[in-house]
Every structure is written in structure tokens, then in C-alpha cells.
Image (tube, rainbow, N blue to C red; front, top):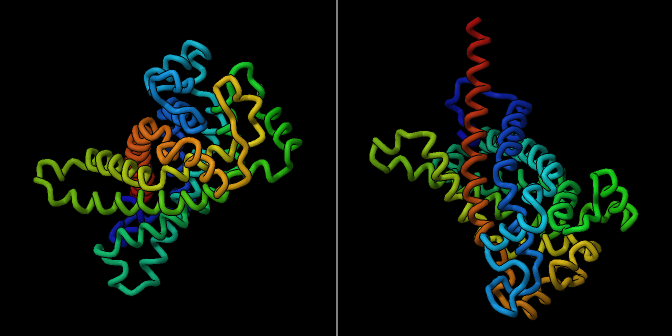
Length: 322
């Protein structure tokens, strides 16, 4: 179960919740990284993503995948994989540890009716949003590094992580590592909030299905997790596009082979330029691979997290029995 459960006989420590979150994030990232690379390429492309003479380099998921494979090889689908894995490990560990702590404190401190099943989605929305903001602040430098590795073409500007760190530091000092933090925080609170809230809603609604279906615990987690990922990602997607555009500012020389590049002075300027040049649809570039990724990632991370917590609780029982 995701979130504090007073009926659970074996209570895990914050460290154990962090381990479960880190492991689930790590495995999930390895599985969905190819979709993430395609999504980022779509988000950073100024030209329309469609098959026409006005279209950009990438015109669809299959075409983009084929182009990446032909021009950059299989390794292109895991560009930025090392920093992405670091990101997922840190993010998952901090997010789930803080989320479990907040839901426990809410259950202990708030009136009984406020922590009831009826208020659970609202409670999980707040706790999920705050925990995601904490995790984002902890790993934003890694996210910027991962975005730059994923978005560079050939020849590569960054050959290794140490070289990338040095170049970024000389480029603008510590502020370089926190580019895009404002839209990230604005985006991540509602995204994670809706993700945890809709997951709680879907799992509650699952009990109304026929018993032969509702008894399938693993299927419930996977289906409800996928639904939660799609809903939450759709609601806040434009902010994710803006975040990616801002994170690659100052990195234009590595992207010129992909098409036009733009310079933005901040969040509002970026939105204004995108709407003026690319229309409202520009804010939803890369939505298809992003929703596919969100469904897979959300279902996997909730499923793996629950399984890790279950395994840790079993180890406690075995140790106690011995």
C-alpha cells in the first residue's frame, strides 16, 4: 500500500521507504528511458512535429525512433542514462520517504474525519506534491545534466560526466545546475499531487469491480498506476515542455543539427514565444511518447514500490520469527 496504513502490523523506517522508492525509481527509469529521449527531442524541437515540408527533423514516434537508430545508433536511446539513473534513484528515495512521513504525521495529527477514506485523495494530493518538491530540489542538478546529455546530437559536446560538470560550471556557475527550477517546482507539485491522488481514487474505485477482478492486487496496482500517470501528466504537460526548453539554454551549439534554436529569458518569455511562433499546440509537443512513458513509468513505480515494501516487511517477519 502507498501511504501510511495504521492497520499495517509491520511499520518500515524512513530509510527502508527510501530504499524501496530508490529501487523502484531505478528499475523504472531503465525501462522507460528510450521513450524519455524521444519525448525530450520532441519538446525541444521548434518546428512542427508533422509530416510536411514545414515539419522538423522529428515527425512522429516511429520516425523519430528510426532516425535516432540510423544516425546515432542504439546507444542514443540511453543517452543521459547514467545521470537519469542517478536522478531516479535520488528522486524516488526522497519522494517516497517524505510522502510516507507526511501521510503518517497527517494521520496522527489531523482529526479522524480528515484522515478518513473520503479525504484520502485530497490528503495524498498535498503530501504527494510536497514530497515531490522536496525530491526535485534534491536532484535538480542531476536533471539538468540528464536533459543536456539526452538532447545533444553528433558530434557530442559532452563526452563524460566530469567534463560536462566542468563545462556547465564555467558556463554560468552554480546557477547553471538549477536552470528550469521555477517551472519544475510549479509543474511538479500538481503533477505528483494528481498522481498520488488519482492513484488513491482509482484504487478505492477498484473495490467496486467484480470480486474476480478486484482480488487481483498486482493488476490493480499496474492499471491504477497507469491511469494516474496519464491523468496527471496531461494536466501539467505544458510546464514540462517549458522546463525542458529552459534547461538547455546556453547549450544551443550542441542542438543546431536538430533544427532552429531559441533563447528565452525566463518562464513567461518562453511561454509567450512558444505560443506566438508554434501556437497552443507547441506547448504539447511530445505528448504522445510522454503519455506512453507516463503510463508505463507510473504503473511500474507504484507496483515495484509496493513489492519492495512487501519484501522488506516479510524480512522483518522472518527476522522476528527467528
